[in-house]
Amino acid sequence: MNAITSVKKAPERSEARDALETLKAWAAGATEEEMDALDPAVARLLSTSEAYPEFNRTYPADFAVGDSYKRTLPDLQNGPSSLIRGAKKQIQHVGISNFRLPIRFHTRDNGDLTLETSITGSVSLEADKKGINMSRIMRSFYKHAERTFSFDVIESALDDYKADLESMDARIQMRFSFPMKIESLRSGLSGYQYYDVALELIEKDGVRQKIIHLDYVYSSTCPCSLELSEHARATRGQLATPHSQRSVARISAVIDPDSKCLWFEDLIDVCRRAVPTETQVMVKREDEQAFAELNAANPIFVEDAARLFCEQLQKEPRVGDFRVIASHQESLHSHDAISILTEGPTFEMNSIDPKLFNTLFHVG
Image (cartoon, rainbow, N blue to C red; front, side, top):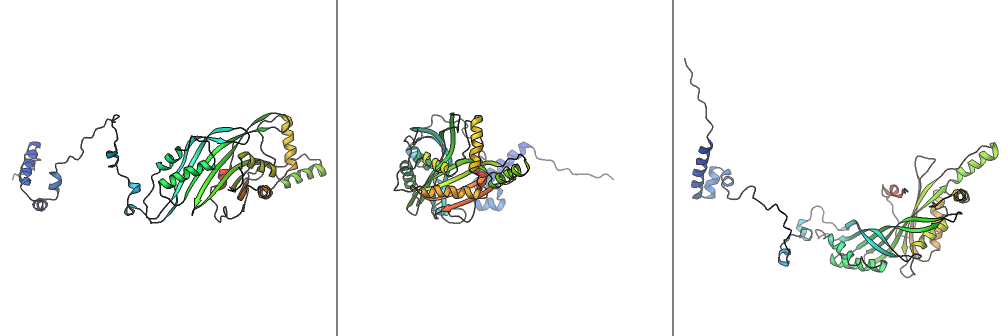
């Protein structure tokens, strides 16, 4: 007995096209309900819009933006509070970090210097506001960038962007590397030492504070190691050397608003009076010997360093609250020795940034 097998043949393209034309003709007189009843996919299939419309892919270099066109541009950051994602809470700081400009600064000893400066600007954001226009901070700062900078100029820039962004609190921080020519200890040579400096202007609850930050790099000779080395020499005739290491103190000081100018060089001098074993720039043999003698005359533990800096800062009438962070990057141990000393409420803190001491490493 022969079995007859029925094979379903796939429709040809021409048949599919004819079926589509028939469907379109029917749909032209059908309601949306009738099309949905037949198949919800019919409406998508018969849509007159193209799935991938053709766009102009050539950059329109001659396109000019007029005021009427600008008014049509979406601005999500200034949108209604309904667009806020997450908790509707005030944000203490929101803004931009590390935009750089060549800024001209006054100095005490060498006239004006133009230095590459990294700027951070932030404002507070109220709980019912979606966001801020970040570029306004930069635009506000650029208005003043050509002026020789002082805290008065920073205040003008802060006033501008605080008003532009309708914010309660605001902050500007400017970081740069400040060069200062230093003489060697005995050879008569001189070279430039570079100091990491930051100027900070903070306004909170209508009160402004001017703060200067300075990193001072010095050598610390361990007093215990020095005595043990001398003991080995005296009792056994054994040559021994005490361990010393490159160390860093970060000084942060509130500037008294009613006092005269505290120059960068003035704060560096305060540090030198506290700990005179600053690392050297130009060194010949006589300088190296002098540095060894200077270290032996000024051995310090990290606790000593914090208190010595504190003692000199307390004597400076232009300084209010301050903080000293010291890190002795041990040559004996595989870890560092650290200390933090604060005076006044400005820099009090319970929690320490986990990466704080990682930022106190200085390389040549």
